[in-house]
Image (tube, rainbow, N blue to C red; front, side):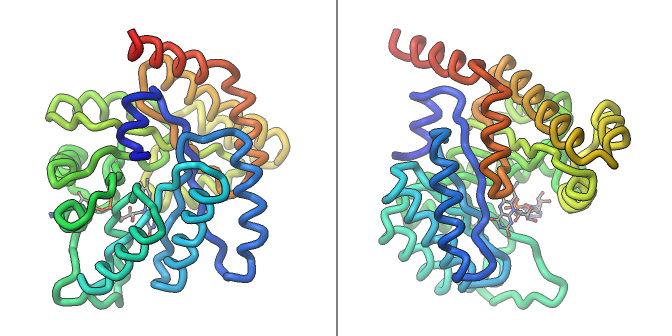
Length: 300
Ligand code: FAD
């Protein structure tokens, strides 16, 4: 089923993001992880696409296919265009289609300093989105950044590029992780005001330790609100307390987002089922209640 239809029919979607193992030999463990994750019935599971080229991309495809066939969960296969020629992308897209995958998250990927750019390669994700839209029937997701992409001159400039990406054919958006819901609400209001009207899932990554957050914020540019900083400083040397506080913080973010009518929660699960278990318990019946109300409104 196309994910854009799920947003409409099923209300706020609860999705999980996983990444493939580094080596093919670790696929067995990964499959066990997927089965554990499936217990919480995500509306879709997304699988990241490694920057390291075709071999890793094929693991992404294998896992996405497994999720569809063996778990009966909708997979969302990520695909990055950086470094690929159009012919290479056409081949990968044909394989994704042949595997029966209907949903793709189309990305540029991070450019490497030494990375070669094929003459007909795409420079930005909106070009990939337009290309795929013109040749395939995939439901297309794309990335967005509530606090602006790290390369963008300003959030406004980034939002204008985002609108180009949606106009090129993106059916829904998934955000970069953030810890400041107010920043997300401001971003959402501006996005809607410039006619970005597709569903937007909020990316949430539970904080499990300070080193992880320092690494992730360096990569993502996400800001740390004062109460989040206080939590990091207070529990930095008490790993178990930090874990509990990080889960509680993520749950509070999710409940606030659901209360405010968010289109979806995309959980960066870091391939750790116990994190999903803790978060799903922590948000209790909030998600189910909002989903049921949405279905009731749609039925009426
Ligand atoms: P774009 O939409 O192309 O934007 C990149 C930058 O270029 C932005 O600053 C934008 O404002 C600017 N821009 C866009 N169009 C133009 C234009 N026409 N002219 C000038 N500037 C422009 N990376 C991976 O390698 N694998 C993954 O699986 C993966 N999954 C992700 C999932 C999510 C939900 C998110 C948020 C990110 C993910 N990333 C992944 C990271 C992503 O590849 C990087 O953030 C990358 O730097 C940007 O990708 P994009 O698709 O957002 O790029």
